Length: 139
Image (cartoon, rainbow, N blue to C red):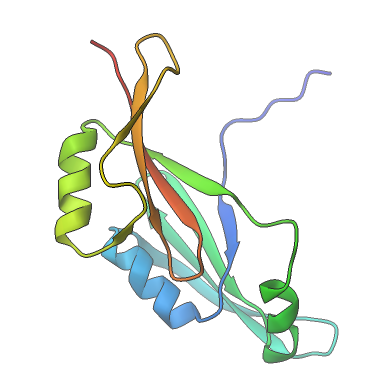
């Protein structure tokens, strides 16, 4: 199979409150580049916001009120984490900590991945999503 895939276009995250989630991602430097509504079977409206930073796009979507419990109770289909590549994990950790994000790890964690390893840490978003900051070590 000769399937050409260029890159990840966007990552969709179901959210409980679009306003809270949009503010959270803005604090991380994302900006809203598109907002819209959509209709589900019952003609109730949902809300979507495409949040962009550099070449990354995260789609935040809030289902209509009648469908929110389905999202909250979902046992599969959620994203485990989104990983952002960073140049300096220690500086990134300090900045994130200074800005009162909920950090899971007490400090960046080393993994014996890649040639020389990598360091990462995670924060939690307002819907329990994990956002990983990761530096692949070069030297």
